[in-house]
Length: 168
Image (cartoon, rainbow, N blue to C red; front, top):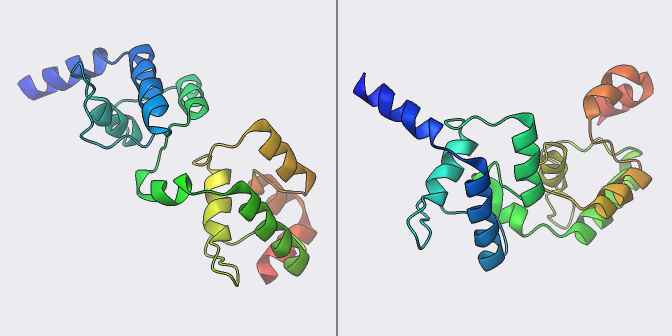
């Protein structure tokens, strides 16, 4: 019972604005939001712990809060963070265009790796799940070449695209 009270009190003390301010400071200092789990600020704020709690659902966030965190560059899946951190949009676009030329669509399988070893499927999945934050310009560039951010609509409404995806 005492443990439950302590957990409830901890959840009630979470303040998103305070958290975001510390996250912005971290990003300014380190250039990203890949906060190590044990990271504590100079004044004792357990930023790494809070990041972990948010990632794994111990601290629940609303859609509005998630959007705010996404806009800051919050990394939801840390195990892929090293690859995501190295994301090169121009290399991604080059590989995506080559894929479209070869297969006639942009419905890249999750495990697809290009001939030069670029893990295109990994990056496509992480863009679609918003684990990689793109600028508005990058999003527009993708839309212009026919990139589909929500494949659910395409796969179930467009029979030709669905058949092409099945053949791949």
